[in-house]
Amino acid sequence: MMNYEPGGAPTEPPSHPPPPAIEARGLTVVRGDRTVLRGLGFTVRPGSITGLLGPSGCGKTTLMRAVVGTQAKATGDLQVLGHPAGHPALRPRIGYVTQAPSVYTDLTVRQNLDYFAAVLHPGRAHRDARNDAVTRAIGDVDLTTRADALAGALSGGQRSRVSLAAALLGTPELLVLDEPTVGLDPVLRRDLWDLFHRLAADRGTALLISSHVMDEAERCHRLLLMRDGRILADDTPEALRRRTRTATVEEAFLRLVDEAAPITEEASR
Ligand SMILES: Nc1ncnc2c1ncn2[C@@H]1O[C@H](COP(=O)(O)OP(=O)(O)OP(=O)(O)O)[C@@H](O)[C@H]1O
Image (cartoon, rainbow, N blue to C red):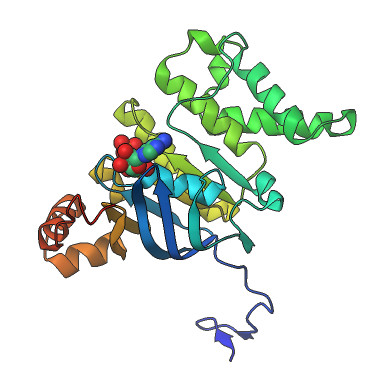
């Protein structure tokens, strides 16, 4: 079958369309004596922003850890950029930013990023490319004027942005961000969401972003609403609001929670 551009010449579909950024089928994770993720199935497309929302403890971080390959006791099928999650080939292709910023407080912003860039692309031959990547990443997160400040002298929100810049260094195809906007003021939150949209649109990056902030959900292309280790809904914000006849994603989420059968402590083991 051929694709037709409106008013243009027919174009052949690419012979090898890119695989989904993430494809989960029956993903189950046990932590301690608890089943924390319960047979999840979902797909994340390249160039899209997927919001992962749900109450504290519902399994968002566990799901992200499974995607980046750091979660033990994950069963089912979890493919990432065409490889099983955790495959060594995925390391340079995924950026992961945890809730706790991982930066060296006794180095400047630029020194931190120089260090991470050297780990990613060691050797003198890559020095110019490394410098360019560091300068670009610092600009991406709007820290150019603080590039020579010690990371220990930055605010919490600025330190989180250094972590994000480190994740952007390798131009990852998949960015997994655990609550990246916590502690940021509204202007910075808006600027970061603009950056996320630019990364998706211009670089084709897939982003999986967890958040507690429901108004951020409206900025995502798709939403995974989670509760008690299950996916309550996997849809666009607009479709969710329409389906639940609500005005906001927050109301849609509360309606879906009310409709869902409660999971007893006994059944959760
Ligand atoms: N190291 C651990 N050992 C056993 N259980 C754990 C461990 N870490 C987390 N859990 C449990 O796994 C469940 C999911 O935790 P997870 O951190 O994935 O939730 P979350 O949705 O990311 O929460 P938050 O929004 O508060 O970060 C919780 O019930 C938690 O108690």
